[in-house]
Length: 271
Ligand code: KIV
Image (tube, rainbow, N blue to C red; front, side):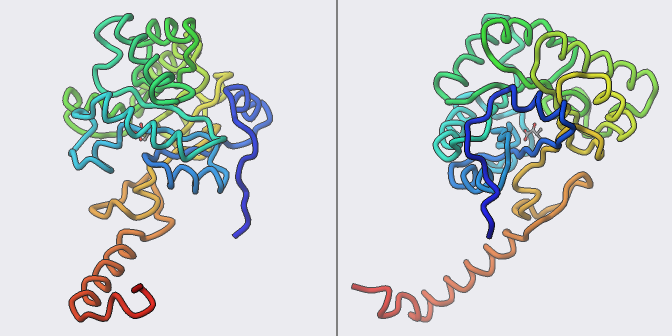
């Protein structure tokens, strides 16, 4: 397979330039070193160590239980796998809300202990002041508006955000507040396509969409969804590019059967 990978370390400037040149940004949420290397070898430019870690890897039902220690552990792994992609650590629930001081100290941990190049925080104008403090302190920040998985308990579920005019107006304000605070990009999650287009056109920083249609400046997906590792259901906004869950089950069944029947290990697997 052709290597369409990266050959130099990417910085925030790369993403702003891509927006200006109307080139799409390719990003993926993933959690370990080998997957990070495969992804950047195939041209994934921005890797998010998402707090989707909670459901994709750690077996939780949502992102709320993910701790900063768990997140940093996976950030370290991803940083050892990817040399060139821009790496963003997703700050977990309640790690940037209690105070500016907590937010700054925790953001610094992503850069210093997790070897990330930036952090992502959820929320619009309510977190804008925090984003501004982080950026002024030298931390590249990615915003995240629309569906906010860390608000699952107050929202009572997941849904498309911005269908009503009042909510759409608020989202546009949120996006602008995040841009004004100095973020280098903003994730739009589950926002109607038309609104995502309007937001993308009104910002000078790139929008990275998930479930927000084709007009965003880039796209992000969760690796387990696109590889078929999360088999219970496929979110409408995703697409399965492989069926690794099924492949794994086939391989495990064959291995179990061969061990059971003493077919494995064969002569060539023995010393
Ligand atoms: O946690 C995550 O993976 C995310 C992306 C879906 C944007 O927040």
